[in-house]
Length: 125
Image (tube, rainbow, N blue to C red):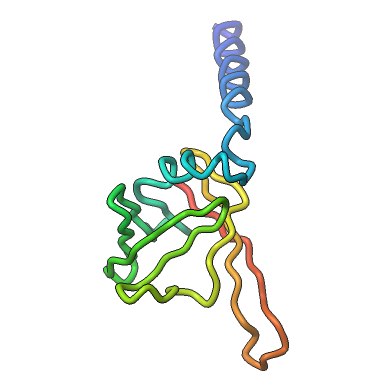
């Protein structure tokens, strides 16, 4: 029994390590299509659904229950309102994306106008 559990644990480690590759984590223009496919579906932040991306170019902000448009160019994710205005001060820069994890940089202007603040944000599925 101990050998079986040990074997299953080792297989689990091998499978999880094999699944941790970063095929699609390096933001290049070649990965744009892969990002556009991988981003589809619902992403969760701190246990709450945040964004649901659809293949028709719309994204539902689950928090506000408002629909926007999304585009990915290279590693830049832009979410815009119906008039084409960004919903944040800057587009989001994707650091990495897999089928279960999206990491991007959110950037905002400092209130005093002295520059910007960048925050790394992680969404999961």
